Structures are given as C-alpha cells and as structure tokens.
Image (cartoon, rainbow, N blue to C red):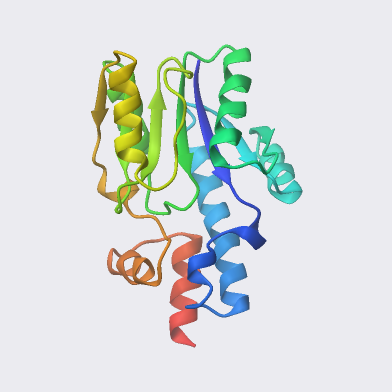
Amino acid sequence: MHAGLLFVKAPDRAKTRLRAALGAKEMADLTRALIADALDLLEAADFLRWWVVSDDDAVLEDSGRRGFDAVRDSGAGLNEAATAAIGAVMRAGATSATLLACDVPLATAEDLRDVLDTGETSDVVVVPGARGGTNALHLSPPDAIPPGFGEGSLGLHLQRAQEAGLRAVILALPRLELDLDLPEDLDEFLTRGPSGHVAAVLRGSAAR
C-alpha cells in the first residue's frame, strides 16, 4: 500500500507571511480555500491511501467525513509531525509514503502520479519548491530518511539520501513548485488561469 500524507496547519496559524497583504476576512477565506482544494486533490488522487496530519479538530473531522485517515499534530513542529505520521502509515502496512504540503493549489492528481511512478525506481523523490524548499517528498520505504522540512530542505533531503546510500532524484513539477507563501506568489498563481476554491477567493478579493 502506498500512503499519502497531507500536512495542514490550523487556519489561525497558517500563512503568516501573507497576512500583511490580505485583510482578515480574505486571509480566513484563503486558508479555508487552501484546505478545500487540498482535500479535493486527495479525492482525485485515490491511488494513494491518504492521512491528513493536523493540529486542528475541525480539519481532522472534515477529513474523516471525506474518508481520510488522520494523525494529530502535537504542535512540536512539522518534522516531528511528519515522523509521527510516517510511523502511523508504517504500522498500517505502507511500503512508501508521499508527503505533501497543503499550500500547492495548482497541484493535480497527475502530478502525484508522476511522483509515485518516479518512486518506482528511486528511494527518495524530492519535488522542489520555488525557494529551495520541498513541496512533496516520496520515500520508499516510508522511513528511508528522516524528514527535514524547512529552509534549504531540498538540499538536506538529498544529503540525507546520499549519506544513507539511497538513490534520490529531483522531480521538477511546475504546478507543484508554486506554493503560496508570499504576496507575489498570489499574483503568479492567478497568471496561470487556475480554477478551484483558492482561485475564486483571490479573484473575488481582487475585484473588491
């Protein structure tokens, strides 16, 4: 079984670097829209068994209603949450894990299929973000390397794979590369003619 792990911060803690560019209502709408688009993506990518990792009760409840498993984030940090979630999927019998950020609203099921297919011949697949981070990480087995999300995580994941003697590849996927962290990311997102909940929120905000 191939597992997928989606990481979702509580809406009131998410996207702090965007708060100066958006009003309170727009910020709240955006965080809810990001979660809605992400859960829609999980439903489309049903070739993975999905766990949603969050510290927010409402997110976990909504995920459960939509048929996804849940792992509670203790709040100790993303990498600690990822390590706990990896343990959960391994206990469930997963042979691989695809770890995914919540703030990549352009991502498609086809992108995730590409990640999984690349993982058939690689132990570690790293999908880069725009600023040297990691927007998706495929590990086979799920504990192939410790997760090291954060600044410079692309290089760190490759380094850990090399130190472990594992085959690692960088898989550049333009839709998965764009995450919404800074105000300029919102403009870039809209230039790509997106659809979905996030696009509706941002277009509505721009029209006001």
